[in-house]
Image (cartoon, rainbow, N blue to C red; front, side):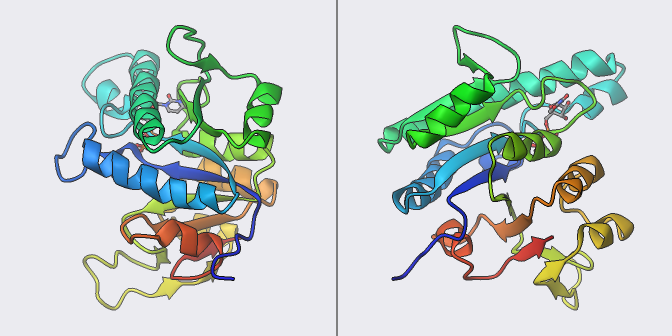
Length: 238
Ligand code: UDP
């Protein structure tokens, strides 16, 4: 048997920037479609899938507040950006015949479902892909924290964090060819060395609840399916 997924239910976290292709801003439909196709492969293996998508390709609260906006308002703009990304991803997935629900931490019933935990669990049981949007619904948080929170609420076996590199290194592999790749690293070491995996509050929340974080590259075709069955190159934070 080629691919046997390790966990029956997972949460895939991608940053908003993963959707922008080389445009530098916003959504690049072919890139969104490519990621949707990666998710479809995994769905075909029978894995139940939660997704959290960031909003940094459109707006970040910190950037708004640095330009003089009130931080909380700027963060709400960031949360709205994640809704736009979620709708873009939903549309690409539906184009591939997948059944999806966008579920928002902030109710906006004309656009998507409000977050009701038991209802979301039911969608997963029915093999619908749940895209959790609007982060945690609170300013001063990030979508990394939202991903960790939803992964725990949905009883996911792990968070798969898709990035531009194939795991965690001791320094930036793009600028330093000597960078050392970790196949496994502890939460505490990630925090102590301030390695850029997810933000510190998300790492601490995952640690306190024993939720593994698997960091892998979104740039290889079939990469997600491989990593889900423990193949290919990745880092597990546990
Ligand atoms: N955000 C927030 N609360 C949350 C999640 C997100 O206020 O629970 C806002 C915050 O302003 C953040 C923006 O939404 O900058 C986009 O999310 P994030 O920066 O996590 O996106 P990513 O870096 O993953 O693209």
